[in-house]
Length: 289
Image 1 (cartoon, rainbow, N blue to C red):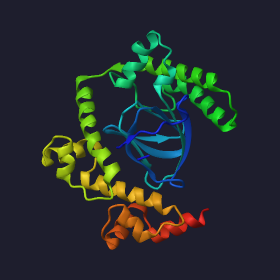
Image 2 (cartoon, rainbow, N blue to C red):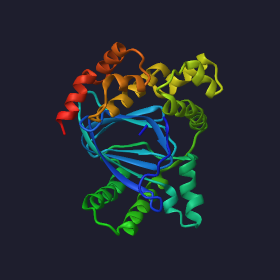
Image 3 (tube, helix red, strand yellow):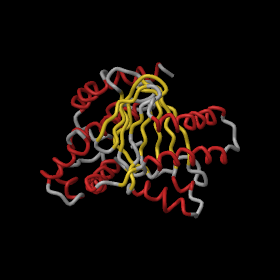
Image 4 (spheres, rainbow, N blue to C red):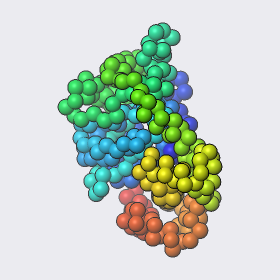
């Protein structure tokens, strides 16, 4: 994943549904801010992790769930030194569209953000108790790797959406204002995804959002919790870490291709973020294969 608009279809084009498994930090240290058109359900099997959704952050432990509506900016990161095993379910609401009243009454308002579902469910929440059996059944289907389960998968998703839509609340004016700000912010985030190897200034990003540099900087920190510069550096470092997992990657080339013109600074910033130098990171990754 790259906020930042993920444009790839998760799953098959004619059945846009998939489950991914994840381990923090064994497989990755996290996903930076991103957004996509799919609905996403994140379920923690063990340990704990941090999930950010729009301007809120939630600490998820085993048995807890995060719910991400389509087009909501979100992120995943490690909870301090804690590890986590989790899976996330992604699907497009369009796959549940049967052309009847359900689309306009239930699915479309969720997709547009006009109705808002809970973002975080504790293990013993009433809504969690209602939907978690179906989430687990979807995971069991994925684990079995048996084909021809499309109707069963779709039926479970419909039951889950039944409960989620029943808990949805009309979007408040404050929430609508925040969503509109995020829509503007996405322009800057998409620019980073496409041009992170090049020089990107605050002023350049602000102009994309039609804001002054000072207002943009304040808004960016308010919506993401970090400064624009810090976000850009983090995104470049995460991109570098991903590239260094390739055995053929050369550290200096990786640094330059990710927007770092000073190798010493890249090494210091990388160690500050990952607790090890790029050389150590690459060696650990290679030895784990």
